[in-house]
Amino acid sequence: MEDDVDGFRRVPRLHVHDASPAPPTLMYWSRAPVWGQLPTHRMRSHSATVVDSSVIWLFGGCDDKSFWRDVWCLDVETMEWSRPETVGDIPPPCRAHTATLVDRKIFVFGGGQGNMYYNSLYILDTVSRRWTQVPFTNSNAVTSTSSTPASGHSHTLSAGASSTEDDAISALASPSLAPAPLAPSPALSSLNEEFVPRPRRAHTTVLYKNRLVVFGGGNGATALNDVWMLEVVGVPPDRMRWQKQRTTGSKPSPRGYHTANLVGNIMIVVGGSDGRQTFSDIYCLNLDTFHWSTIRAEKPYRRLAHTSTQIGSYLFIMGGHDGSAYTNDLLLFNLVSLQYEPRPVKGIAPSPRGYHASVLADGRLWLFGGYDAKTAHDDVHMLELASSAYLSQVTGFFVNV
Image (cartoon, rainbow, N blue to C red; front, side):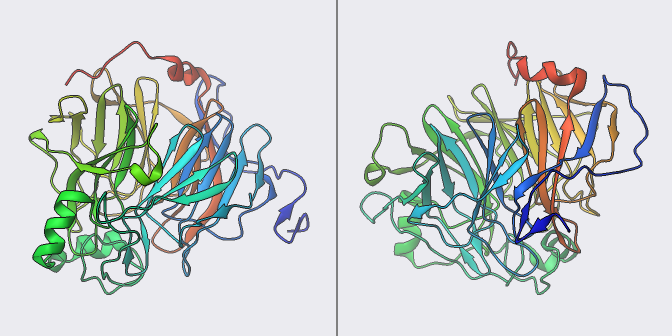
């Protein structure tokens, strides 16, 4: 790249493609003409968090060889990449974690690298750019970083895979990868059950009424379907305490690499995998009553390692693995009719992939990186919403479940 020197691109690069002309009213995919201090590696199983509506903060993830703990920022107004210097309790390299915004602070929970699975919680203050590790102790939530043996560089939810290529395909292809029950010491079992989430990755986290709500994931020995809560607003880090939440109704089977979106007081869980099969089901958890219910879509779609971004009264579900192959389909789930709804999309869509990150910012859907069973990606795509841009302003509805 002639205009790239030491990872710095001086001018935006427009990507030439053979996409046919499209009406300006239709949604349209294109590569983002980014510039600046470019990320130095490809990304999969990373996180993307929008801060102040205009800057997307990326953390962690892995490529085909290594795990990462660096932070990158993309200004969506200028398309400029930058790499902020952070200080403090910088987390270890991490993938398949969650990163949740709380008052301009990003709460990073769980994840792992190699055969390590974490249940630690780190807070990045995006103003001071300082990391703080929440000092859980045996008296108020237990442990810092913990690990559970797994199978090398694999994203399976239960141990047993020998391949370092695609975790989902390996797991789905072999019945021997059924989740196995954990067998820790009675004391550890009691402690984990009562005070702290098990180490995990491929889980989800949403913020509701000043609390983080964590669901599912996998810990290398089994897939999980537990729900944990943590009060994070107005509570000093050294006073934060985890609470395992009991639920009623028909709860989802254990799973990871699903998605969870908070719509009002409802957490909507889509798809995922238990290491053996890929799910198409949709579950709703009322976070006031903690009652689970299900949504029956007329045409279900199996998905794992996809993304789900709420834009008004729709979930934009992008990519992932359908149990047979990676896909680049964009599915729109209508939160009023509770059914998938076809919408025409033009331009050049991202190649089929999973383990990417997607967010809504500046009236566009942004997609970063991912993995396609052969390699990780470092590209940035954006979906112009065009006449659908009004969707992000739609708020006068509720999920009737």
